[in-house]
Image (tube, rainbow, N blue to C red; front, side, top):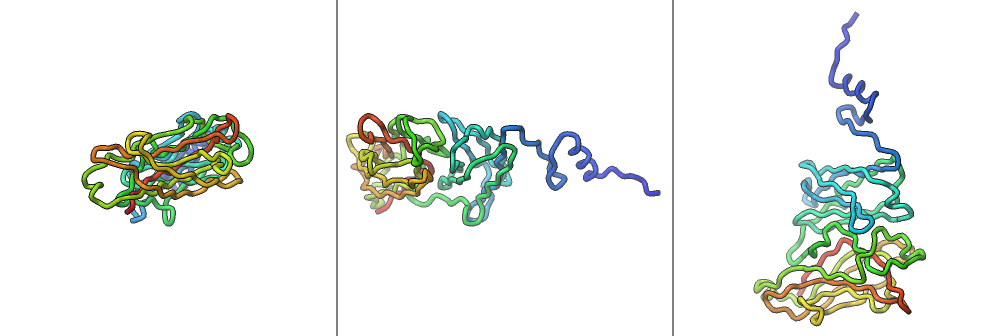
Length: 276
């Protein structure tokens, strides 16, 4: 009669029977708690390299987020309370890594006890920042909500985060002699936006200033999808007057839509690209 042997695989199965969930035996993970879901995945660059030390955030509430940092293999995983996103669709997940453009990923919604995968590979791989491209400070892996928190209807009733006020102003970069001699005269402000209703809230604006709000250029963003989803924006504006040492800043403002009601909308994946 053959003797029983305790192999790592045998021990793996035995341990899993008592307390933990098992995947492929050899990788043991904790079960998902009731009312929670799990998001995991891998971040890879467009050159095929894994991206370690990247931040992956699932924003909610008032500047809060469920989050994790990718390991040496570009992998991450975290659990979150699905009730934080009740009624929200799509739900936005934001990523940030030094030297890469911001990237967002959308999910239709989350169910309790379910594991979801986010794999930024192939066509979804992270793209390195190009010359003249800047991520505004404090916008990294964020979803910024502007407005008075008085909203409803299909266009913006599914906003994911709490309002940050009626406007934001974020530093892009310090204007240097090298930038001054590079021949830049315009900039493209790119982002994803949800809930924007500029056709009726005509004072909505996105733009740049040279360190003071008296020296600015701006444009009015078009309406985002009427279904409440995110639209992708690339808005070109002239650079404001800039002297060496000035702070180039990006701003956005929410305006009234008639009466005292301000437009509520969200902006993510914010990037400023200087162009001739």
